Image (cartoon, rainbow, N blue to C red; front, side, top):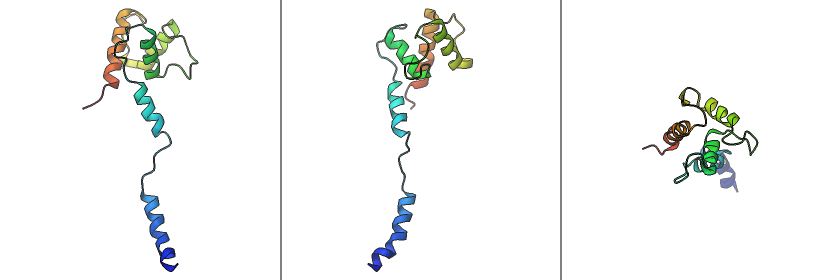
Length: 110
C-alpha cells in the first residue's frame, strides 16, 4: 500500500505531461476532409458550389444565401478578400479563378 501511495505523485505527473486530444481535433480533421476539391465536378455544378461553400464557410448549417446567387457570390468575394477575382462575380471566368485559387489553398503541401 505504501508503494502505491508513493507512486501517486509520479502517476499524476505523467498524466499531466501526456498529450490529450483537443476537443476540436475531430472537427478539424473532418473539415479538412470535407474541403477536398471535387475531382470531376464542373464549375457551377451543385457539387462545385457545395465545395466552395464548405471551403469558405459561406453557409452556416444550411442557413445562408443560395449557392450561385448574387448574394452568395458577394459573400465569396468578401471571404476571398484581396485574392478575390476581378472578373464579374458569378461569371465563368470568375468561377474558374475561384476554383483555381481554392484548389491551391487546399492542396496538400509537400
